[in-house]
Image 1 (cartoon, rainbow, N blue to C red):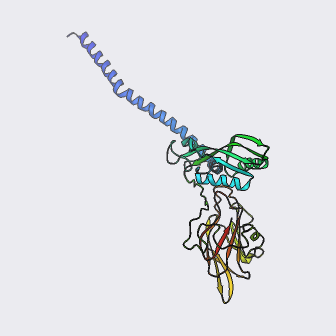
Image 2 (image 1 turned 180 degrees about the vertical axis):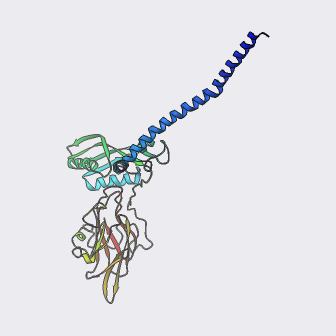
Length: 375
């Protein structure tokens, strides 16, 4: 082989070595370096963003809490579900509070129309909303339409519209038909009411006490669940209205948002604070009332938790007034579960006024002796 050929081979071998070194050593190393440089730039951008957020930490936390508050305020405008029992009691309250009769109304199955999921979570925080749509932490928005065939006075129709507009939960009336009957001087027609609900984490459905009699083991004394149980009395004519002005005991059930008084107040004399037994727990509390005879005198003893008060009864009966109120929202949980033990021989009469129609604050959960309720 000539020297020229040898030099050519050596040159080709050098070129091959350089090419292989570039392809398998230099190029991969450069690509790794470029990748690391890109990652460093991305990390630097993220670091700069985090440093900026750290500087604004208190502001961002405050804004997050404000967003959560606003979100919960929206949630509180809607019930946790569209329970049919609650709907029935709602329409019953419409009839009881207005010159309006529901001849018929339909309750179709509710439909889901929207799912609040991860996108909302970016605003209100992952502890309130998290996961993709359909996750266990998502909020489900549902709706249903109640079609009502009604009859009532003109004032009654207007008051129903106002009642729905001012109801504690948001509703809509997309359609109403009104026809006047000159013969009976009444208005009748149909109205469509759209109701909405948002179910999800930490949402508690409303409950109702329909007041359906549950029966009693002794038909001659008061029975659990019967609002008309007990002997005939002078209060039957006006359904206990006279108890509002004259009574032995007053149970006041106020809104949890009231800053003026306790949520639950029980008093034998509303003008004397020392007779008060109270609760500010914003929860259903157990109220025990005992009516008994001792040393030839009659007494009523009432207690909530460790608070207790005893008053002498000088009348021939025990009249108890329950002054309640409509609930402000789903967080308003004030209420009493009343248990009455009457061994005195005196009749005990309850008169309940202004209680929440769909979620009553007052409930008589236990009784013995002669007891009668007027609602």
